[in-house]
Length: 253
Image (cartoon, rainbow, N blue to C red):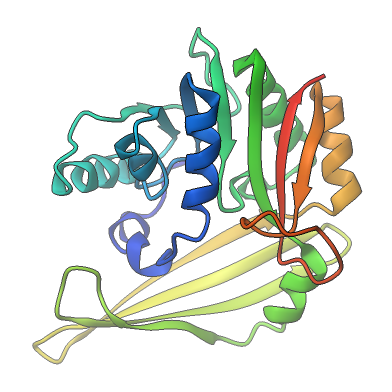
């Protein structure tokens, strides 16, 4: 299933951050070989890595996101630097291996069942070279749920000018939660305030199947990985009770 066109069009407004780019860039350059991003979206991470000298392939199932990635790549004068592939991360069938495979910004969690997450990690294992690495980051559930109360009430996440434009926008999210299923459903709405005075609204939902620390370790172990490092943020601070993220680097077992 493709993402709604509006999601791709306004992704830079929703995902207005780059705190993870340096972490993945350092891993990519240290890997020294081919790099694959699973769920690359509009190239938010892949393009800076390629511009830094990494040989990057970006894989995503959404044609709208890949079109946005190509447009962004061209806009910064780097057209053709990244190889963009439309494929499902559960069945990538790329026929080659990579020195680094990574999935940034909760990408693993958009797979809304344990079965799908197992399949994705098994597929990733088939793509990682024997001396390669898998890297990913997912939110740390207790801290995320504290900071994003799942009470169904809309909360303003960001408001301001659209990137590269002069029109204002507001992004709100209402989160619902099933603790039993470990599922979060985020109802997103983006309001665009046109210069004409009209208000344009776009709504879409995201479903995330979150993992706790040792569950994630077991999923990786079952897929044929062993964890090399686990950090609580992209500056490599220790993972502890206050960590906002689980930032993992794993190697083939």
